[in-house]
Figure 1 (cartoon, rainbow, N blue to C red):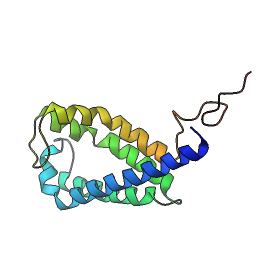
Figure 2 (figure 1 turned 90 degrees about the vertical axis):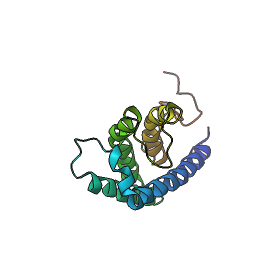
Figure 3 (figure 1 turned 60 degrees about the horizontal axis):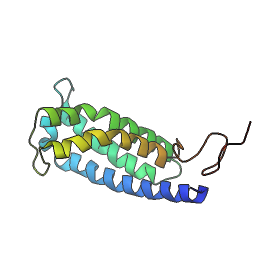
Length: 147
């Protein structure tokens, strides 16, 4: 993949992630009560945490689209994807019903497996990592120089 192709891919992924996180952030803010059952019991102030994560998602989405805050937003969204994993596990293993979300392993399995991809996607779209498109010692699509 060329450097231009990589940057086009990063830009497209930033737009896609921004759209996803804007949507999810709004859902966290307008449907807070519907998400309360997903929160693990050990989370303090679950309602406040859901609302705060909604605001973080909105800030991360907007930040990804700016040059100044892109890297910070990418780190924040990657950490967010890690931090919400316990709620995703609880949702799956305790079969908690949430209107509009299926309660089957056809939904939960891919969702749980895809969470690390969201971590990678935020970091790659934010320009923090190059894997797997750049090779050590060379640019994208160029093999490393011989020793």
